[in-house]
Amino acid sequence: MTPARHYCIMRSLLLSVAILSAHVSPAFAEASEPPFVGAQVFIEPGQTPEQIDGWFAQLAKHDMRVCRIRMFENYMRKPDGGWDFTLFDHAFRAAEKHQIRIFATLFPATPFDDVGGFKFPRTEAHQAEVAEYIKNVVNHFKQFSSLHGWVLVNEPGSGKAPDEPLTREHFKQWQARQTPPDPRTDVYQTLDFAAERFLVDHTAGSLH
Image 1 (tube, rainbow, N blue to C red):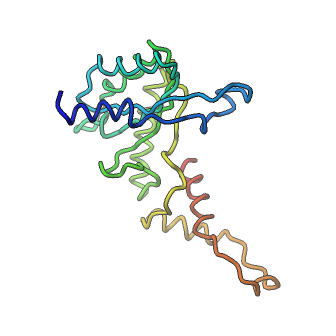
Image 2 (cartoon, rainbow, N blue to C red):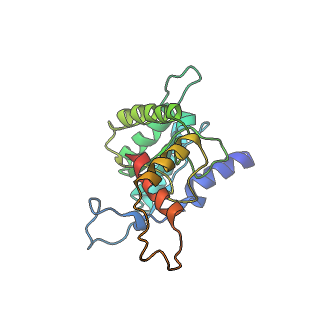
Image 3 (cartoon, rainbow, N blue to C red):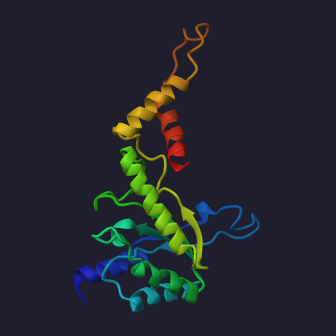
């Protein structure tokens, strides 16, 4: 096994282990239930069905019944514009076999070094591309009983709104909707959280 392959496997199984109890939804567990522990499993080209099955077997062996998978568009979209879901199908089938529930994170195409992933569409055309990705991925993977839910955005609210054409247009529209300051209280020194408030609204609007 090459060092690079060994690193890939270890990252998938050990380095990316994450405590998911902070993300328990009311629909998933009652308040009386104990926290649960899962792992982030990276599915990437070059992995074999046997390797993938082995990772889910390890999760089950150690009573880790949930995991999160980043649904990389770059690993599903073919050069001709078609789709090949085979690699991720192996993971969802292995999860079914070993009774692991998957939180699938939407991860539209983004540069390799963008580890945080997609946050906001750059243009109207880019927004349409993202919508097409979501439609194809969601409609395909809804067939698997191992799919527990979708993580709509990885790390929402982190950073700041990007300086992109569509975001700038939305910011102008957002500013126009804001209530002007009250002249009776505007004499006081205050902190300006406009950028943070816009980031919240822009994130919610983009998800909608």
